[in-house]
Every structure is written in structure tokens, then in C-alpha cells.
Length: 129
Image 1: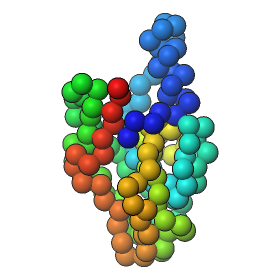
Image 2: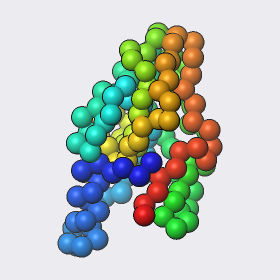
Image 3: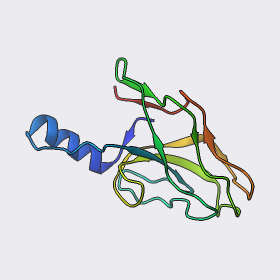
């Protein structure tokens, strides 16, 4: 995952080159999407079946690469999700907030009632090159 949102691109350029303060989020959250969130944060986030964004902790980066340190387990779906999960995004708030990074899944995944979306430790990678 190395696609950045317009929001984060602007914040990083301002923070590193224009001495404009960027407030770093205390916690970041993984969000699931049924459409591409795009740089402009215009995707459709999953919103049914007991869905809630999940917090993520990353390890210290090496050469601009970091990974999640533990499994990220979403709640068991109480109803079928509308549409397949096609993308994930890292956001700076549990609800609303700003999209930071996003990427498509290698394979879209249907989540039906009783299923759970899980990202294993070290499987969510953010790369800045």
C-alpha cells in the first residue's frame, strides 16, 4: 500500500517543505471499501453487518517500509456486506476523519453473514519510496 490521499500528500508537503504543522494521529484505523477510495477519498466504505474500522499498529519502518504488528480482525458480519470488499484504506479516525493511504486487494472478497475479514500480522504493508 503506497497510494496516498490528496489530504496526506498536502499535509506532508506542507509539513516538510513549508514549516506547516501536521498533527499526527494518535491511532490509525483500517477501513474496508466496496469501491476505490481514490486520492480524493470518494470511495464507498462498508457500512453494514456490524462493520467498524479497526485500529492498526505498525512496526518501525526500514527503508521506508512498515507492516502491521498484529492481526487486524473485523467484527463477524451480522448480515451480508453490500458489494465485495475491493480496497482497504488507512484513516486517521474511528469515524469520519481523513483517508491517509489506500490500495486495492489482490482479490475482491465477499463477506457474508457469519464471516469475518482478517488481515494477518505483517500482511498490511505501507511503502514510501
